[in-house]
Amino acid sequence: MSMAARFVKGNVVLLVALVAAGITCIFVPFDEAYADYFDWSTLACLFCTLAVVAAFKNIRFFVWLADVIVRRFKNMRNITLALVFVTFFGSMIMANDMALVTFLPLGYFVLESCGNKKLTAFVFIMQYIAANLGGMLTPFGNPQNLYLYSYYSIPTGEFFSIMALPFAAAFVMIFVICMFVKPEPASVQFDAHVRPPMWRVAVYAALFALSLCIVFRLFPYYWGLLAVVIGLLILDFRALLRVDYALLLTFCAFFIFSGNLARIPAVAEGLGALVEWDPLAVGALSCQFISNVPSAVLLSKFTQDYPALLIAVNAGGLGTPIASLASLITLNTFRRFNPGQTGKYLARFLLFNFGFLAVLIGVGYLTLLFV
Image (cartoon, rainbow, N blue to C red):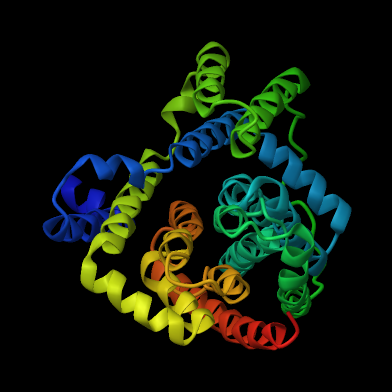
């Protein structure tokens, strides 16, 4: 296989994103508004998290932690529940994309350590669903919640009352589906690994905490970015070389794609007319094509029905791989660990995602009867 063919095969998602962005650039010429498309804080946080996770990998921290998890939870059902729900609750604290960057590698190493990589696709898909739905309960659990909470000045108590039933339904569905995993005994397939240097674990954990501080905007994102880069240049410059830069470029391409799409008059006017008819259905549908955060920003200009829109852009993060940029993280990570299995993964991804989406839309309509 030629070098060009290998590049195309290894970067399909990036190339599709670049082509999609390029097509929209035909309709929206370059101007100063392009700079506003990019969420620089998100990109900085994503870079920092990817770099710190790479540093953890270099000291085999995840391999050691996987060994600990397998020995503690003992069977595949308990291990699956642990991996999925640590992602679910982690997304409430660190947002969905950061939770996936952190916990997907852990999931893979756990499954590899007990010789059960056949569950990788299922666990990754459930981790993705958990990451998307775990953060729906809180205003800061994901970017679209934070935006709508601020834009509409939603009272905190009302926010929780709107999202409580969809959140509870998501929790129950995830738990029930994970219970279908057979409780096969799990054991480590190799000798226990040497524990990584604890001083490095502590330092990298501090750098990881700095990355999370960017999410909460405790200080300007560039200070956190600078601290992480300097720290890793001193401690492990190889981690900076192992960052998934293709993923960062893919995010940039989709920022351009969704930003341009929202500026095409026919698209904006069509969505505006439709959202007045049914904000929940149209909001969820919009997410499938321009993802959930741009949908929240765009549709908020056309409706005051924030309960419906809030449910729509949370549930609508499930569905197509475009529905949430977090899906790109999951897909890229799966392809890196399991080359050649992308087609089967996507088929299962779509089946599970649209199944969850259909149920949550129904729960959403039920919720709107009481709020």
